[in-house]
Image (cartoon, rainbow, N blue to C red; front, side, top):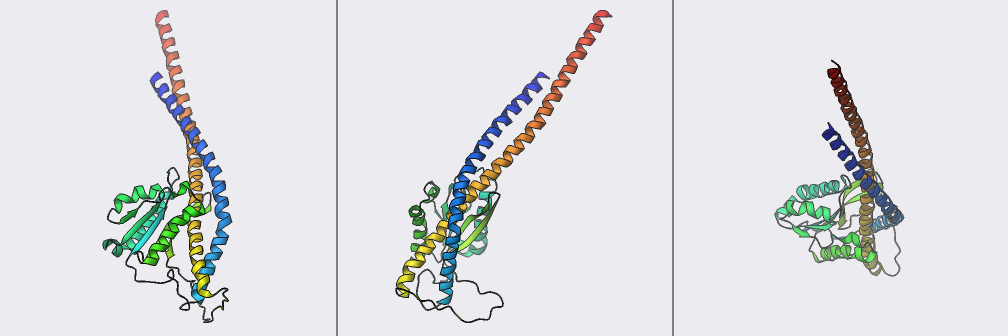
Length: 298
């Protein structure tokens, strides 16, 4: 019986140690989440408005201007950029993003994969670790897995600029981005978004208006859009990264909070088991003493 008590005591100590770790990780994630959430909350309205404005321009000036990032070509070469975290312990966050990437690769771009014209680009180590073996037949780019070590605009822009340069040169005919969109600390939504070519706004169902907005450009249209569109694309890509960054910390904080609660429940069960085992041991010892005393007297 003493062996059983010792085993339960060791399990209680182990669970207590784990709970202390999960509490600490929760606090660290909560601290990082506040900064990451502030960054994406401040940027999202600006980035969304710029993206909407760009798509409006593309729609209203259809055919009236020439931009390499608007050209729709036959989709022969595709790049799928997968943004995940560098570390785990964040629930199903990374798994859900990877599932979105798998759907894209195996459903939408199966023919490009078969023709060896599919490139997977990774930001964050978890996506690369999972998909490198599954898609060893694809072109794998891991140059940016450590991007989250420096989220400055200049560093993040290196990735978006690479994507734009390769699209403009014809290396890619389409670029998709898979990432986690931040809703709140408990909700992160996996997304697979077309990054290039730029898609115009979708016409509302039932709309019959054929009129287009009349934009006035200063200086001339070509010069302005040549500078404006790449800048907006870089801002949009940075929003993807910041969204994913906040989502990671939100998911990890929630996962560690759940783990702490589960550890507390497990400790309660173990303490009940320990007390029951201890009571059984005491009862057995008393019974042996009473039995021994009765034998001596009898």
